[in-house]
Image 1 (cartoon, rainbow, N blue to C red):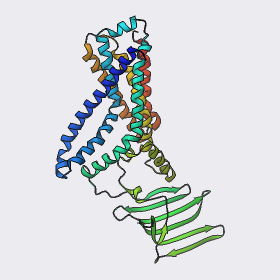
Image 2 (cartoon, helix red, strand yellow; image 1 turned 180 degrees about the vertical axis):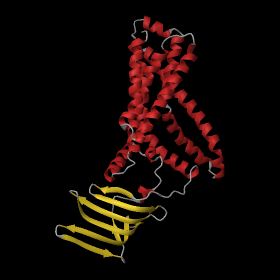
Image 3 (spheres, rainbow, N blue to C red; image 1 turned 60 degrees about the vertical axis):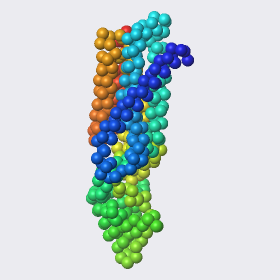
Image 4 (tube, rainbow, N blue to C red; image 1 turned 180 degrees about the horizontal axis):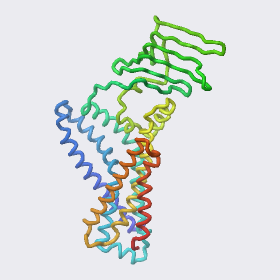
Length: 360
């Protein structure tokens, strides 16, 4: 690695981490001041608060990475341009593409770190963060309120519940149907099912089962003895799953999506979107670094401040486009994979266009 590469790479990474620390510190202070009343009201200990912000910091750092990496690229490049260093570099026979190499090396390091943090480290930290927020900032009297619930528990088994009580872990008007080759093999109905933690299964009460055969059916009824059912269904399927996708590592997220697909769940979209974002987000660091260098590589009359302001504007446009496309994906109005990658696709085109027209 040349001395020039080390010089630019060092400045770029140092600026990036400095901006991250400053912005995360500011956001943490604002968050603390907004939620201090909750801390006092709930008598939260100092250790718990410190642990919460230790978990909050990496979450927020990764969230603002597209903004901070862009600001770092703009700030470093505009300072080089302001001191006429870029002109000297290009005049020395270094091509503009070669000049950008250390930036891409830095962006690649940030992208890899972002992927590792997003995939495994931050979700584990979010387990504590989300639990803390639900305990102290939200109403914990959650009860599953959906009616007429349908989902799969195996490729050929379907469950129906008229209602479910989260406090008692019991479901009412339960049916279990086994369907093979578009024909019902049997149907089990129960007035009530209740979770038995010792048996790790469901106790069915007042149940009957109809087994269908070619020449008729068998019928069995029991209203005295409870029958244990082992299903791919637990009380956790009826708990408060708000922000659950943020607490799952990439491996856990893949397993959870596979389980939802098996059950035929309707809320699978939000987990797929989360998975796509974890692959999309690191690439945004490369694209925004590329644009940031191009935007700020020319010396302007407005100086560094003007170029940084332009950088903020472009970064915020990227964030707004990302939020809008994510919202469209969640509503199902557009393919979720396309929607999540839309900001990267659009800004990749913008980057190529800018690269062609920028003086080199």
